[in-house]
Length: 594
Image (tube, rainbow, N blue to C red; front, side, top):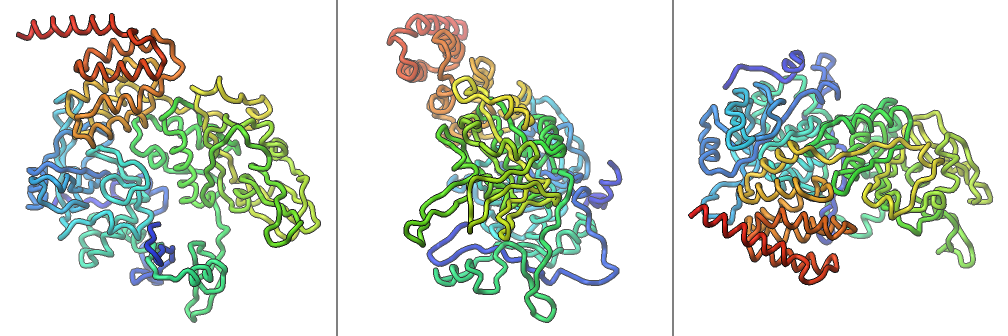
């Protein structure tokens, strides 16, 4: 093993359901918990967030063999991300990948080892933007930990290549793991292999392991009949159903816990919000700052830049640090009114001829103490849809034109950090941590509703930009499954696109190419890229086709021409002259090569 350096030393240096089964969150205080007065103090959230963690996924037979035979130090090739961030002794989780359908992949996939960075990156720039790295294997597990093994560990979800994914999985060999997720990941390793606690402590340090052994929330699979589940939800059984509001004391008595403990400052892990997006964290810092000066925020930018993802991750971070209790996500539409946002009267299903008040999205988010995320916010006529909310967003109290139990419904500003609904006087109290986050596609802003100055005064606007050329190149080169020919085509696509393309769109093209074994690239461009050019002038389309056509086969050009003519309603012979030029260029190139 390499020199023993703990993580804290580094700090000093710088629902699935089948029939009657359902996953239920239960707070389980397990055998690791202790009440000794002299126990070691766990790390703070800030201290943990300052520790870098990485994962490397490999499906190369030679590398896999060296890992399984504990050949260390181990050389890792074809890396291109985080070259300026990786430092010696950083923790790296080693993951075995590969397609089990291929004969050469004769190993079990999953998390197999924990290593430390042994050397700084070297041979930087070989094979375009790649570099090499050596890691020292510190701990080799008997068997890989698979994604299905981590289903009960919700805090680990969405670690690429390691844990269950609730969204698209990036095809990168090297990934950064959000520090808060590593605590859950190490807990899963410890639960699976309790005999290696000493080795884990030596590797991660005693304080970090105290975080790992704290009371932990599992998703526990239960067999329940329909009636039992309804009874739990109706509060007729003593279950803690994910709220954490009830627990048992030492005598077995059910007691209430204080769940209204929140922080006044929004200090998220910006790297967790950024995730695997190739971009600067600077815009996310602007988002954090606006939230901390009590502003609601609208994220703007072209399609596919990750605006909605960042809004969701910002809310998830808010929940993690106890700033807010999560989020409600909805997409705005052009027929939105105050009925959708605030609420209104509807027939009471329990009493014929009676109307009852039903709350809208805004009031629901206040009652549940959650942020409201409105996707594509400029698709709604906000002056019509927000109504009394304009007054509320300026920090005033309002009486709504609705009643419940013969008492008017009110929205008031609260001095508490959290939001809630007071049933006694029908008041929705807005806490100081409640926010609305919106997203706006800048390409659509001229064809959709515009914002009034009154609305814009109440929001801060943060642009989520398109990645730079270098960031895009890192994204492309980081996908080892892509052929060099397709990497070149993607680089040209980004260079000559007549309209900026967000990384989500490029990732979609990459995933399609990879899943088809690099054989269906023109279908990926037709299906994901060309529709983004709606509304462009025909000459812009022709210019794009001319540049991209130089890297296409005659068959691919025919497919692309056919789609462009139909999609943009162009004359059937619109690309004839261009194709003639491309054919002549191709013949001249072939003659030169001969």
